[in-house]
Length: 532
Image (cartoon, rainbow, N blue to C red; front, side, top):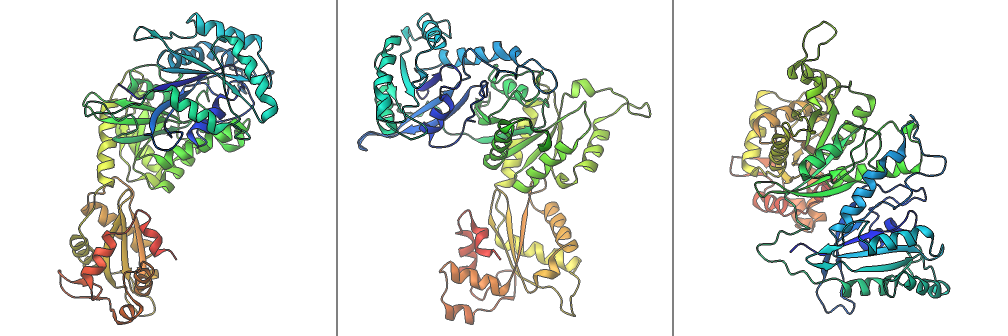
């Protein structure tokens, strides 16, 4: 059985997204007083703690849904280009119904400070009559508990008990703002859900083989791709630009059993065009999605020229040092199109164009896809897995040092002040991204043009041809200080140690074996030992 699922429903602005953030102990959902901010289902798996600390943690999946009944703010029914936001109503209500229908427990959120409104009464009726999504699961009705939000202090508790009149028993209560009664609410929530004991036949809902961030400008087809992968309308797809606000995690099990988490992000546009604070929040969520992804799919619209926004997104991807696939989406609409000279544009022509416009991603593979009908989608996902494997590879130190020596023998770095550059020791200290540290005599000799030369030769010879590589040059003195900082050697040993080059078996510090072992044992933030 999957982990228990909890759906949060209610009218707009009752604090549903704040409640999800409170339970998850992290700002995942965008919180803003504007109605209709949440449109898709936003789900997250969290571990509920035992009230007395003696019981097991209970993993649950919490789903935030859109506010039922009002989807546009007063005076904001139409966006800046005249699109009617009210047309999203059916899609949002479908997402709410899906959240209710798949839940094991429904939390009906009601704003205690506003009291019971006609909308709340309507939602309560629809829940009872299963018109807001079926509550029938396994022959039983899914339980509903009212949760009184915005109970900011003791004076609001009496008002919270009035919500029992909705017919779903004594309400839970809490305040996301003041954290009042948070612990009591979480303890009661713990008792309400079953303990899920995974076994060898149950997939781990919190586990994934690949985290895939899907980024791009508005209407490039990100949500369509997620729905194609999920095999259902998991996120809203609309011609209205900017429909997706949050970064939506969708877990998908592929036909071959591999599990991915596809992260649908908000479409990006130029910052000066942002209409309100919500767009800034959405942009921040997209940046966070890039940070926690293993591989990034950068979607380009085949029907449109590469814009300044595409270049900005590509720059953010480059700075993340994450593997990336440049995906030309909607290829079915562009295939056979003719250029200004009347010639049919081929994939090769488009690739040349992309390489010219996105020079910072010259190493990234390019794929052509039509997300809507699934054309080439499996191949793109396979390519993403291949890139992740490349970025996770570690090259033995001996092999790396021999390669560096061969590369330098073919083309030596230019001398500065009559002194030639010399490499004493090289080691890969990290994967994802592959991080290579070179201990040299003069770091300035290896910067600029020669660094690019080294990077190109390393890509040709190592299994990192299509992923970012971090190449760090550090002086001998700084390497010795790094060892001292890590507590691996004493000051006297540092004074006595001399970097040198001997044969293939002994290259680096005088105590090369110890230095190599230290490099391999460095934590994930290993490069911090070599900071300036």
